[in-house]
Length: 253
View 1: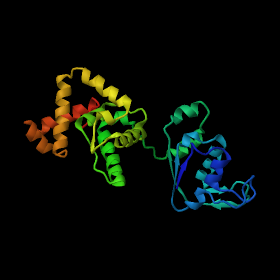
View 2: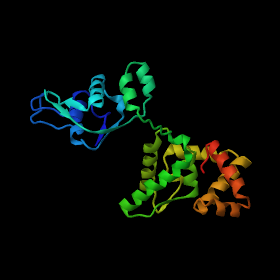
View 3: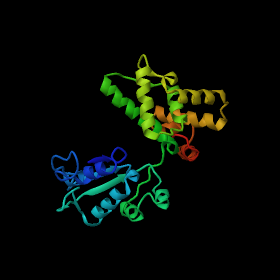
View 4: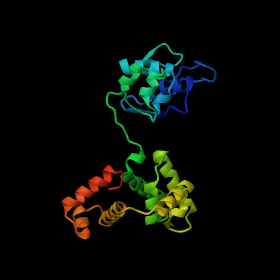
């Protein structure tokens, strides 16, 4: 069960998570079972957990401590067995220091912490995700779109301040604007087109030319490094070293 914490605040979030009794507040005409109750034996994902109110944080901490809670307006405790996942794009350390997020709740949630780097720090994922989104749209609309090399370069060059959601928007926009199956730079959002134009106006260094050529050859052979090394006329060890260097400088492998 997924809860979007940014769209629910105060009593609404507490009611969504813990449920409410009939007559608990105006409009509560029936007893409502919250997501913790419904998901007992399963998993609840709190998306954007850094945005929940201090009161909701207190109630959430109690549930994590003892697995029990009371519905809003209720007196009887409900016991649940739920696995909790929490996600946020906020800096919870900073929010703790500023008094917006409970320190004890933070450490309760951080039993196992997974940091997902922003898209700009993992450029090798950009085309993997872009092609994934494009394949989904192809199936949805029964079309056969594909990116040109120029469009792929523009996508990889952009720094994606909006992360994966921005990438999805860019791919969706391109499929709307494209008049045929080919998606080129001109079909991408304006900021990507401008970024690509600036890059085209700047002379490439030998290292950049080599990096781009290695990336194209790897793509051609489906990331088979032995085949790529043979086509490039170098050893696999040399190719491995060059790919490692590309990764360290922020290039795509």
